[in-house]
Image (cartoon, rainbow, N blue to C red; front, side, top):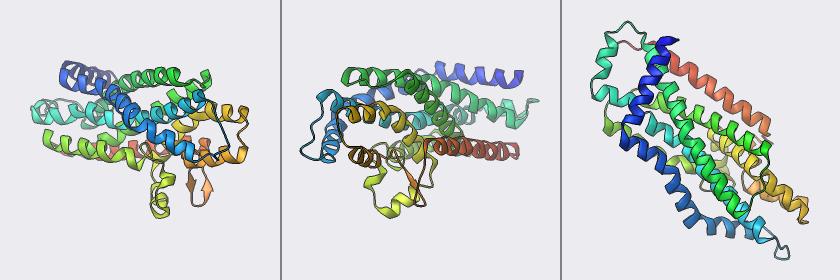
Length: 296
């Protein structure tokens, strides 16, 4: 345990020492929330209004709160995973600068070295994404606040699950990489594609039925849906108070992926939590197996 914690502290110090990587990790959520608010807000607003019958009128605060909550979910869903790839750069840099050669001749198990990378990635990514959550809550507070303390606690739990998922996923992906060019290419691919396949940029309900069935097998679908359910719970409750029919609210929930479907059955939030936790455990076992079998 002492050896693992020493490796974690060492990797965390390297993260803070690399000013470029540190700045990129912290500034990314800020840039995203500005871009989302600038370019996606009107798209989400028009999409939401088009889902309501013309004779229904809702307050500007509720409309703005709904849009802001969607934007916040999109940012958090993407940031919790993509930031882990930036933070996990230490694993590759150790190969580039030759630090791994020192580890290889030390009396430290190879699996412990990679466990140290993983936990350092989790801690650093949580720090960045909790800051992103604070920014998102501030943005939602300005536009239209309908969150309770319980909602915020659930959002924190959702973030922890997504960061754990992103950290173990990025650790497996980064494991065979040996150059900065390789990790840069992987980061570009993940940053460009992950937001679409997890339903952050556009609800999966807008995709074709075939693609929806494929994406229903991915745990990222349910991680994003967890965030949407907890971020928008108060919004749906306020819609009921404003007299919007339950059938219309149910349709809105479906259109925003709050009720994901797997094999024709709606997946509840309890099952979503179980899917995310199970995926993290399975990927963790795979990570331990491949790192433990590594021969230097």
